[in-house]
Amino acid sequence: MRIGGSLLLIALGAILAFAVTDSINEVDLTAVGYILMAVGVVGLLITLVLMNTRQRTDVIQRRDGGTTYIEPNSGVDPRI
Image (cartoon, rainbow, N blue to C red; front, side, top):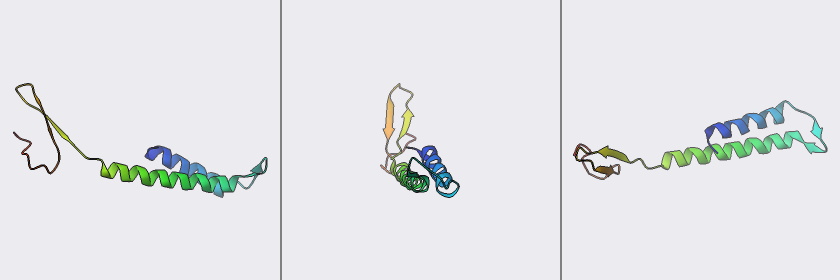
């Protein structure tokens, strides 16, 4: 689930929790709304943590046709 999906669940859950007062076949839509909001918040937090911990790799194409992969903070000068 990405940020858009999480925000969609939060918005849908808020609509069900705060705007709808009915129940369908004995299912409390307010409770369903709160559950959807909780799942959306958890998904958003997981997405943000994973995006923040993703390691970046710089790819440099050399003139001799080779490829150099440089990890951040590896001490290697990327201009080589």
